[in-house]
Image 1 (cartoon, helix red, strand yellow):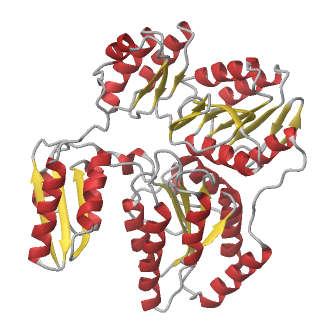
Image 2 (cartoon, one colour; image 1 turned 45 degrees about the vertical axis):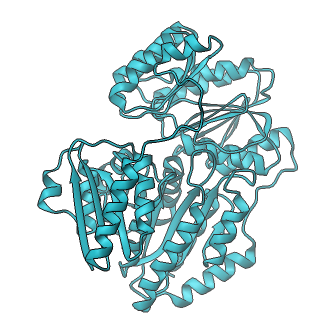
Image 3 (cartoon, rainbow, N blue to C red; image 1 turned 30 degrees about the horizontal axis):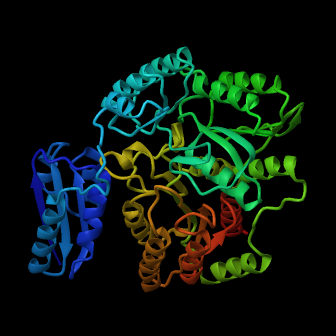
Length: 513
């Protein structure tokens, strides 16, 4: 094996283009690993885990391009590096011949009917462009992250002043008048309206509603920090007021990553004054049951089912058969070695990760995570410890890289590393499909799991894997086709995240029986 590293100073490429370059050079004959990335601090850590952190890489600046290759021979490495340079030197061709405006002002001048701006820029530029869009009277879907809390508050106050909607920053998902923004799924139109401070929470609930033959009127994203104390739930309150007045919405759903307690109470108080039924799911909060017009739920799946039953009482969620569950348990127990004691959860969806973390705490106790603070905070993000569940969509993993829903390569590398740990008893994963996501993530995941099992089998171990797929049969990747590829690779596919997590916890609990 040989490695080759090329550093090109001050050559910036966006993360999706670098992902495509990496995928292209991995297809070169004799190449076992290839990465094209910007020289950010965390990308250097990724290179370190692959043995590619040279002194030159350590000294590179964040705006320097790194092309790193591991291949069978010097010739194969040279070809791969040359292929990467050729790919990145190609000009991006637009599929359209129409005039492409280069600013928000120019776009509005070209088409005065525009009423929504979708902004996805590095955070340092995002505030300025979002502010300008609001000043021009546009609603804003702000996908960008790394916007300061102070700037977020200013933008949301400006949006209220202009009577416009600011979704974000770091807003991953919305469905507005049937149009998906960011990461969204092909969901049928219906009577359930969502306001969510979580991207994959919106995707999980809306996809399950589709499976339940209901649908979504509107799904308004707020950005993950909206229900924190210093933001005050400004967008959520605005969105709730819109859904309360919307004739196409009969049931309102609220979901959020763990909110500040005082802001949660503010949201609950607002919802209690509405005439429509409201379903509230605050991840990690213990309150359940019905109070007036509000039903509190403990999981995303329960939230979707409750909303659907408010419209049609005969609904049932898709779920694993008892035969599949029993077969998985028996096979996994029979092949397990005594050293295999720990769970490793590797999530692309942040809200799905939060849900897994809170549900498994009840069954397994302390779990290390990058979403935790205090005793169980995972200090080394690139090495797991005992029971570990991580959100690989967090900024530390995505700075200078595409999100794992788009580019699963970093998680695939992590899966192979986890397979080398003799203490790993089970992998728990999500697969998020839909608009904006990888075109066929199941194929890559199935291949990676096959490689991981080759590692464990060489050591006399098995590697049970449970996956939840967030998506619908009408997504371009097609839920059923994704599930078939995973089942064919010996991977258990749960009906929803809560079911996957509960089964994983049950399996880990039985190891101590």
